Length: 215
Image 1 (cartoon, rainbow, N blue to C red):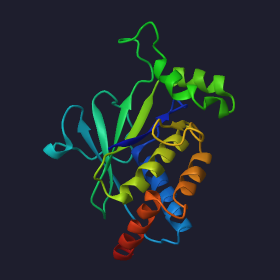
Image 2: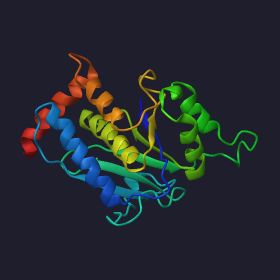
Image 3: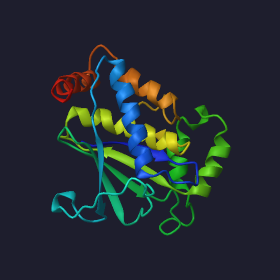
Image 4: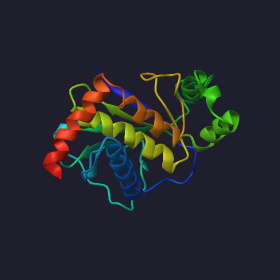
């Protein structure tokens, strides 16, 4: 089973890979510190041509000053922690769909915001900006990946949204809290993992053990 977070950027300027990695590293470290975990993990990216499986080893490493998601139709990203096995994947798309559904080109935007979107302040302005920017980014964690990757992909979604003043949403999480923006997203995501039991708590305990080997 896979789960995803979707990010709707609301700024024209694209962040650099370096900016995304640095902010995600900071937020990941802050996230772990809430649970008393103090360790440094390195966040890395690999870029792959669309339609090419990452296990074919045809990747490239984006430079830190390269614009994040500049070639949405050409590449997808593998994001991972250097010290831990496992990955999440980031995909880039347009928010609009004029080619397949010209009669309703903004169905993706409406789908993402129709449930719970009224919780967002200035919703109509955000919709208008989303149409102007016309980007949809999403990060996916696939079944079988380590629990530590579950922590990473949520923090990464927040970093992508924070740098673009964007909206985070998902049809696979608690729609009473989503869609939302940062910093509310981080607060909600931390709260999900502070519950006394459940799978999210297991994720924290797994990375606590891994942190002892990283230092």
